[in-house]
Image (cartoon, rainbow, N blue to C red; front, side):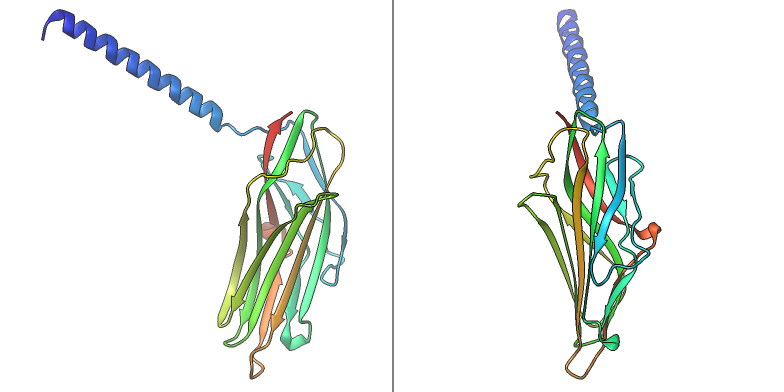
Length: 208
């Protein structure tokens, strides 16, 4: 290989390495999520047949990319004659000026014991106050099935809440329904009320 060819190859390799490093730097910068400096969450109210005095806990996720909250434990149970239960929670979400957010996912955890022939369903809806767009997640269970469950909804951020630091009200409603089997087989389903298994709304932020 001639000296001129070796020099040309070295220059080409150096340029390629430099370009790759630059692209990695851009990708790393793009991967960093937008996060507001301040984020606070509290329960502004709740209502429904499944709500209890233990309702009312809410907090931001440690990375401010989610909101965690509890409904309080409630259940639907054919053996107890409670075939449907529901609870709506109103969240007051406030954050720094210059940012807007959209929900990108929802996670809810609970337990169930559905015998063969029986059925249960957990349904959750969440939406901004005054918005016509409602996100709904329905998770059916046909027996036999028993143990803990997790309901997940991965939504695209199609609705961004308006920019600004003022109060943002966000509704979350969860309902449970059960149906006994043809021979009276039991169906039981619950939502956990412990903070360690709190429900979670994933957030996506943008500057505005």
